Every structure is written in structure tokens, then in C-alpha cells.
Length: 329
Image (cartoon, rainbow, N blue to C red):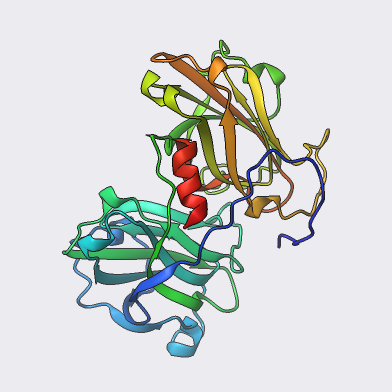
């Protein structure tokens, strides 16, 4: 569990308070359900007509599966109106005991916790997953598929709000979600523009690193991303949006440190903080940007306990006008 203890320190993050998400579609009720495990169950056209039905939210132990520990799948069909296309569309699934991976129309969305053999429980996480608009078939039937693993005790999509919500989003000039270079450990050379990161692995952003082959990683790790910035962005202040990071971060742009969120520790230690809940918005000095050319963003991250990394979006480059609009909504 992350303890919500506020630590007062120097912080370059712009304070942003997100508005409440508004429910657009209530998905509580009957879902298709099967106590089995097959990744083909994520496909949109998979025939689930012979599956059982189950009430969501609710523990599966209370619905005829008292002795079941292990894997199970949920599926639900939902029509999302085109009127939501220009908004942030959030899938809320409440709390899931213990581990989940969520798919929409066969495409992986997000998940929390770690499956065996690197099991990590995420039973106390409130699942809120932003759905990219290009994964949605608007005004048509979409299939939400949820793979769940329960280690012991209660299992399933157990409690909380279930449905499609709309939420204000910040406009991005450049979307930086997707593949980033990633390296566990700590080395100041990783911040340098000319550092060769070709041997690094590729990791999805935003997403926890525990769900991407690093289930036991606590401590330091680095992310790097190369991006071309058009000269058209020169007309306003440029802001780097890094969503939420668990727990602390330092950010470098073309070898120059532009921000630090909280104080980074000098060694691996347990630190209880609310830093993981804060949105990151960092000004990029215009004079360090290489216009119409490659720029390198390097992010040094320290995770104290539990999940870590750039775990929740949006992630990208925007301008001050969009940031002001976001904050005023």
C-alpha cells in the first residue's frame, strides 16, 4: 500500500487538479464469465455464447465459484457514442482481486499487478484506464475483455464503479505514449543526448514496469525517447506532459535537467510519499529545443515500493494554451 503522507519539498511540477470523471455508460450488471485461461478470449469475435454469466461488481466466490483460485475471464459488449470521440474516455473497473489485463476489441489496454510466476497483487488499486480513441469503434459494438488472476481469498471484479466515463484531457501537440527505451539501474550518462541506448529494451508508456517483465524492480530506472519537435511549436511555451510517475523523477531534455519531482534519494530505501499521485507538467526552455530535428527526453525514475514507472497518461508535448484550458475546465 502507498501511504498518503505529504512531504514538503521543492517541486517543479505545476499543480493541476483533475476534474471528476462523468459517467456516460453504466456497465454494472451481467457479464460473460469463464474460469479458464486463453489469450484468444481477448478477441472481439470470440464466441462467448456458452460462457456463464456473472454479476459485476461482485466476488465470484459469492456467485457459485467459492473454491476457485486462479484465472478467469470476463467479457462485456458496449456501444460507445461518437459524441464522446473528442473527450477523454475512461474505463472504470473498480477494484479487481488480484491481477488484471484489460483488452478492448482484442487490443491490450492496461492492467495492474503481476501474473505468476512473478505474482504481484493489486487488489487495492482502483482501475481507471484511459481508452485511446483509435481503439474504439464508435456507434458500434465494442468488446471489453478482462483477464483476472486470483491467488487466494476473494476473487474477481469485486467492488466500485463500473462503466465508461468521460474526463477532461489536455490537448497534445505531440503524443509520446507508446514505445520508450528502458534500462533498470542508475548511471548519469543515461541523461546525455549522444548516449547510445540501442541495446536497451523497449517498454510501453504509460504502464507500470512490473507488468512488463520487471515484477521485482524497486529502485532506479531510466526511460529515453527521441522526438522531432516542429518549429511551429515555437510560438508558445512548450510543456512536457508525463502523466503520473511512481514515485520520484528527474527529467532531462537534450542533456539538460529541466525538472525534478521531489528529492531523489541517494540510495535504495523505503520512502512513503504521495508523489505517485501527482501529475507531471514541466516547462521545456525554448533555447534547448532542436527545432525540426531529433531531441532526446531522458527520465530518471525512483520507485520505493510496490509498482513503479511512468504508469498513467497522458504523455506528450503540449503548449501553455492547452495547459491553461485544461486547468480551467
